[in-house]
Image 1 (tube, each protein chain N blue to C red):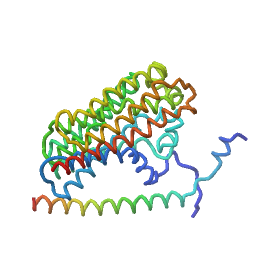
Image 2 (cartoon, rainbow over the protein chains, first blue to last red):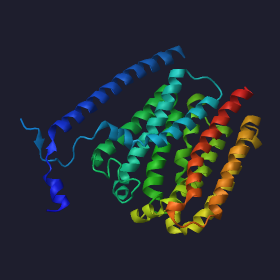
Image 3 (cartoon, rainbow over the protein chains, first blue to last red):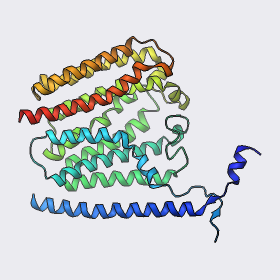
Image 4 (cartoon, one colour):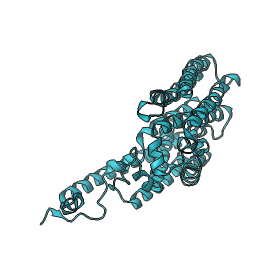
Length: 49
Length: 302
């Protein structure tokens, strides 16, 4: 059996994918929240200016 | 329900891989030079808008880096230095990288335009397009002088920072553009000398691969001389004062000395190229020192 065959036989952990997707969604949520705050602050700064 | 299944062609990339795609370490220099351009510009900008401008410069640089890696995914596989990046390592599919890069490009340009002015946004757009199309796609795979012209892409941040405040460009940001432009060849070729085998195996015609290490050392020395003139231009044109002049004299003197050591070196073994590694590391510090000096000088003069 070659190294490549061994690698192909290794099952991929579905839970690991789910965990990764969850962390991506969390980061995306945080970024979107930060953007809401940023655009609100830009709007206020432009009005003040 | 099973927790183990066959490995799909592409799994969802980790968010850290998207961060890695933006080359955060390169971004620090971009952010710093952009911030300096913004701080030395005459006039006033609201702190929130200033923060947004720097954020957009950083995101624009990250977008260009992501698109650069999308274009070079195949050649990155062949280089030890780049093989562990998200695309060549197989942790991300190419389409995600393309969408990410294009999305960040539009976001950074439009947000900068809305927050500050459309001239600064246009310069940011030009810098992204220049890096991706002129440097990465056109010049890099074709000519050994790729980074000489392509280096212009990295020279834009102080101009964008200045333009975000003033809405135009004047002599000082152009002088700072020239400093980064002529700094790029000795900076990059010092690195290229000791990773030449990597570039050769990837078929990228960097100067040490095409013209040899002797010619590269000669050109490092030549461009260092031009860079030194660009470093003193702000003083000679009376755009900066004694603080910048003194720092420029000392910092550029060290740069010239280190470049001369590289020029005189006859070392052929990349593992033993200490002078080249020192020049590369110092060149990064040099740019931080010079731009920091411009800011301090302008504040002292004011």
